[in-house]
Image (tube, rainbow, N blue to C red; front, top):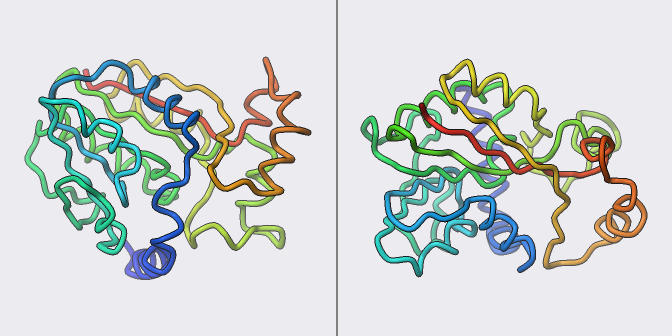
Length: 227
């Protein structure tokens, strides 16, 4: 992995640690937890978890041990879990260590490295374990305009963020050995309201239905299972 990747990403998240560690609305948090489903006992890895915002919802469940792994220690300080500062492409864990991996808004930060990341996740998952997550939808028109390398790219995104193609993730999951790939298109409603979000809800949302979902929903939830 090239050094500059980590340098730029780490600097961005450590600079923005106070404003980025908890962004989902309560409605969105419920949506994510429903996607995770009933998980009441086992070991969880929150990969690229930063503050552990997604896995914090599991803290009150007895019988669950959560490890939050991230590149930025400044982000990890917001986490209430066991903290590990490490490279997600070289996970410092033994084979078959976890029952569930949560990758909340993470894979799209590693464009071109998705397969390597999935292989590491497959290695540390136990048999029948699952990895679940969500990422910006690479089929979404807005994401293609505002997250790609062009003059309209917004500076709110970290240096290496790129929208992720759901079909690419599906194909890579099969190559690595995962099964039962599932996805669901969604547009999150963040706690902090913006003009961008208002436009999404009022003007674009009504069209984000049926076959048009993948073009207008900005995010997609996904999951896969280790055979």
